[in-house]
Length: 188
Image 1 (cartoon, rainbow, N blue to C red):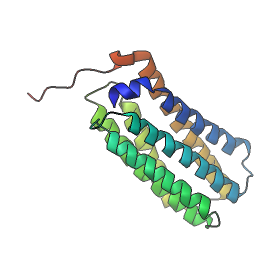
Image 2 (cartoon, rainbow, N blue to C red):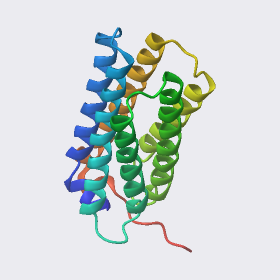
Image 3 (spheres, rainbow, N blue to C red):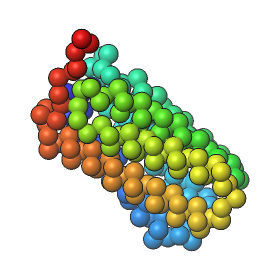
Image 4 (cartoon, one colour):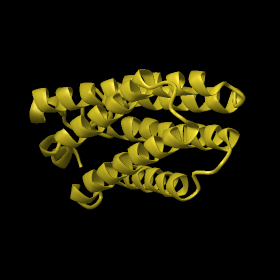
């Protein structure tokens, strides 16, 4: 997955740009209805999941982090489908669903960053973005009664920071090329 990720660094760029655009839209139009937020989040989760799965499919069999990336992609697409087909859910249900999605996504990002740390430099960015996702999810679940406007701003801020971290990963990967990777550590 390391070499394949190096060749397809632009997947991270696309995911990062989508996240940042989603975040900016949340700030530009804070008065959007909850139904619009639901559909916008569903579209973002669908694109994020599709690109995560595409990246994993292009990776060689047995690559470290491949399974976690597939699970992350399937989870994101599943949340997108639920969001699109059940837009009438209450605000509380949406907050809990987004919070749970962020926690699980963050755990898999931390796991992938931890698994890849012996193969490449800069995996701290993936671990930090995973920790940010977990923190975001915990805050959403802890404060489900937050107003719609604060929820929109909270989600927008999270998406912008997460997108920036994805772009940082892509730049490190593109800039360093294979030099960004180091030899696996020996077991001795």
